[in-house]
Length: 227
Ligand code: PGA
Image: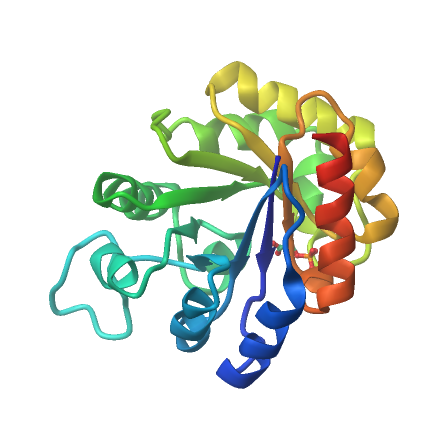
């Protein structure tokens, strides 16, 4: 079971240090935090497993504002989120650019949490499987690749997919590509048990509830009990 905390654009380095001191991940579960770039070095120095939130497809070059897999490895970072819906929505990320990022990161030796998920209108129109099929079609199973199913309508909204909706989507993704699949979208201590007990849910990508060490630890402890 893998529990990853996506901090998005929250927490300075000093707040990161305080969080890591208080975390103490339980045994039996892989715990990862994904701070913003400016807090990666502080987090990695604490001994917690650290992933970035994005990574470029080139090793170096004229790509203002981007960071490469090699630069992350140099800091002790072990992986990266790729293709998060906020990157797709606000920064023109496509299935093709996301897979280029992931492919280079995996080749360089980073783990990748590759995000997919349908928007609300797509679910309402009955297009969930079609969207997931398109998003997953660019993936090639590789060592270190994990998918996160994050229905866009459940991210940061407090609305969680029902355990059945999540289980059905996970089983569908796994029928297309043989990789572990995390669930993301308003995971909290109160719903973690039900979601994480589903057969095809292999962990969680947690946003809001990963910002407080108590709630993140509670989700990690639930995962440890179920492992
Ligand atoms: P949330 O975010 O848990 O706040 O819904 C999840 C994510 O965006 O990865």
